[in-house]
Length: 224
Image (cartoon, rainbow, N blue to C red):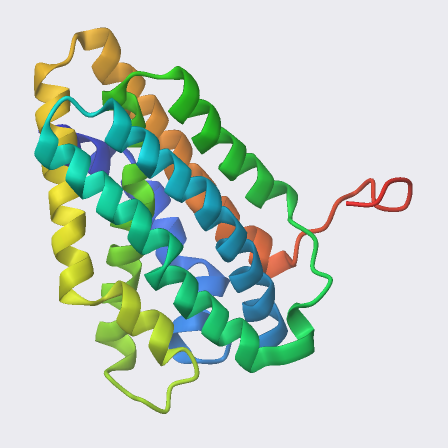
């Protein structure tokens, strides 16, 4: 199965994601609030591109059930997840103002938009899968370590991505991608693998850029 194969191919990267200091600090609650604000601002902006890629998958889908799933996922990304982000950002106040979109956020967003515009449906499905699957994997692992503690500073984030309903959506995205890969040519299947791997790499880079509060190296000459 495609998903089993690609999870194995990216196992070292997944280990690096779970061991990244941003993720470990998020899990134990020690993550600096300004760093978390930076991350949430970037993620809220990324979700706009992600939702458009999901909508493109819905339009390209050759199965009505697939189309409905991707359309609902696009709605969830824009509404439900944005509510999570807005809640944190509003709660944290002025710290969120004036944060520029990071190079990594722009790069990941641009990759998804380019994929949605130029690649066939199976490749789009593979490209959006890591944002589902990796977040659910990380959220579930953090819940297992942190427990269901309402006093945890990032409890809302952990509960969102460890939620059983979200896990069900991940399984549906995986099932769709597996089915598409099974029917695809070897060339398309390899394109799907490359798209998944690139998006998965961007997931690590996204957390790393938040940990570093990545800025533009050209900022002294040009406004971000």
